Length: 97
Image 1 (cartoon, rainbow, N blue to C red):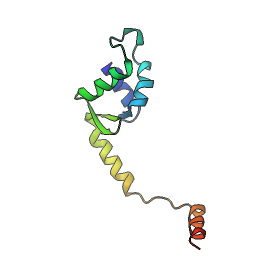
Image 2 (image 1 turned 90 degrees about the horizontal axis):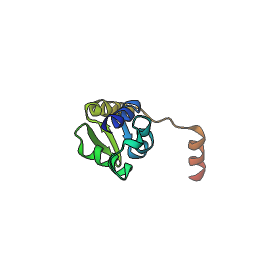
Image 3 (image 1 turned 135 degrees about the vertical axis):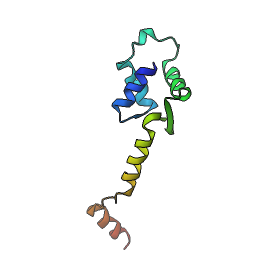
Image 4 (image 1 turned 90 degrees about the vertical axis):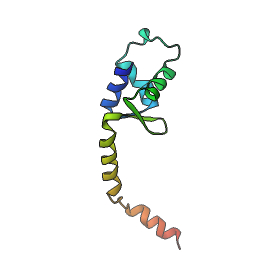
Protein backbone atom coordinates (compact mmCIF):
# COMPACT_ATOMS: atom_id res chain seq x y z
CA UNK A 1 0.00 0.00 0.00
CA UNK A 2 2.83 2.41 0.90
CA UNK A 3 4.46 2.00 -2.50
CA UNK A 4 1.16 2.73 -4.26
CA UNK A 5 0.67 5.91 -2.18
CA UNK A 6 4.21 7.01 -3.00
CA UNK A 7 3.62 6.43 -6.70
CA UNK A 8 0.46 8.56 -6.69
CA UNK A 9 2.37 11.39 -4.99
CA UNK A 10 5.31 11.10 -7.38
CA UNK A 11 2.92 11.42 -10.31
CA UNK A 12 1.23 14.43 -8.70
CA UNK A 13 4.34 16.59 -8.08
CA UNK A 14 5.24 14.94 -4.73
CA UNK A 15 1.98 15.57 -2.86
CA UNK A 16 -1.67 14.52 -2.93
CA UNK A 17 -4.92 15.21 -1.10
CA UNK A 18 -6.58 12.20 0.48
CA UNK A 19 -9.40 12.32 -2.07
CA UNK A 20 -6.92 11.83 -4.91
CA UNK A 21 -5.16 9.03 -3.01
CA UNK A 22 -8.45 7.22 -2.44
CA UNK A 23 -9.15 7.37 -6.18
CA UNK A 24 -5.72 6.81 -7.76
CA UNK A 25 -4.06 4.31 -5.42
CA UNK A 26 -5.93 1.45 -7.12
CA UNK A 27 -3.99 2.11 -10.33
CA UNK A 28 -0.94 0.75 -8.45
CA UNK A 29 -2.47 -1.63 -5.88
CA UNK A 30 -4.73 -4.64 -6.34
CA UNK A 31 -7.84 -4.03 -4.25
CA UNK A 32 -8.43 -7.77 -3.77
CA UNK A 33 -5.14 -8.06 -1.84
CA UNK A 34 -6.08 -5.38 0.67
CA UNK A 35 -5.98 -6.54 4.30
CA UNK A 36 -8.08 -3.75 5.89
CA UNK A 37 -11.86 -3.74 5.82
CA UNK A 38 -12.20 -0.04 4.96
CA UNK A 39 -9.70 0.96 2.24
CA UNK A 40 -10.00 4.73 2.72
CA UNK A 41 -9.20 4.48 6.43
CA UNK A 42 -6.25 2.23 5.64
CA UNK A 43 -4.83 4.83 3.26
CA UNK A 44 -5.42 7.63 5.75
CA UNK A 45 -3.77 5.65 8.55
CA UNK A 46 -0.70 4.95 6.41
CA UNK A 47 -0.06 8.58 5.46
CA UNK A 48 -0.57 9.72 9.07
CA UNK A 49 1.77 7.17 10.67
CA UNK A 50 4.50 6.55 8.12
CA UNK A 51 7.51 8.88 8.33
CA UNK A 52 7.77 8.93 4.53
CA UNK A 53 4.75 11.24 4.44
CA UNK A 54 4.20 14.66 5.95
CA UNK A 55 0.96 16.56 6.40
CA UNK A 56 1.17 19.87 4.54
CA UNK A 57 -2.45 20.95 4.67
CA UNK A 58 -5.92 19.89 5.66
CA UNK A 59 -6.16 16.38 4.20
CA UNK A 60 -3.09 16.96 2.02
CA UNK A 61 0.10 14.93 2.39
CA UNK A 62 3.49 15.08 0.71
CA UNK A 63 6.54 12.89 0.43
CA UNK A 64 8.82 13.97 3.27
CA UNK A 65 11.92 13.92 1.05
CA UNK A 66 10.35 16.50 -1.28
CA UNK A 67 8.70 18.90 1.20
CA UNK A 68 11.58 21.36 0.91
CA UNK A 69 11.09 21.52 -2.87
CA UNK A 70 7.40 22.20 -2.35
CA UNK A 71 8.19 25.10 0.01
CA UNK A 72 10.62 26.65 -2.49
CA UNK A 73 8.01 26.44 -5.28
CA UNK A 74 5.35 27.88 -2.96
CA UNK A 75 7.54 30.90 -2.17
CA UNK A 76 8.24 31.49 -5.86
CA UNK A 77 4.52 31.39 -6.62
CA UNK A 78 3.68 33.82 -3.79
CA UNK A 79 6.29 36.31 -4.99
CA UNK A 80 4.68 36.59 -8.42
CA UNK A 81 2.27 39.50 -8.72
CA UNK A 82 -1.27 38.40 -9.56
CA UNK A 83 -2.64 39.39 -12.94
CA UNK A 84 -5.26 42.12 -12.83
CA UNK A 85 -8.02 41.34 -15.24
CA UNK A 86 -9.36 44.45 -16.92
CA UNK A 87 -13.00 43.36 -16.85
CA UNK A 88 -12.94 42.73 -13.10
CA UNK A 89 -11.09 46.01 -12.54
CA UNK A 90 -13.73 48.02 -14.45
CA UNK A 91 -16.57 46.23 -12.64
CA UNK A 92 -15.00 47.18 -9.34
CA UNK A 93 -14.71 50.79 -10.41
CA UNK A 94 -18.37 50.86 -11.46
CA UNK A 95 -19.50 49.42 -8.15
CA UNK A 96 -17.64 52.20 -6.34
CA UNK A 97 -19.77 54.93 -7.97
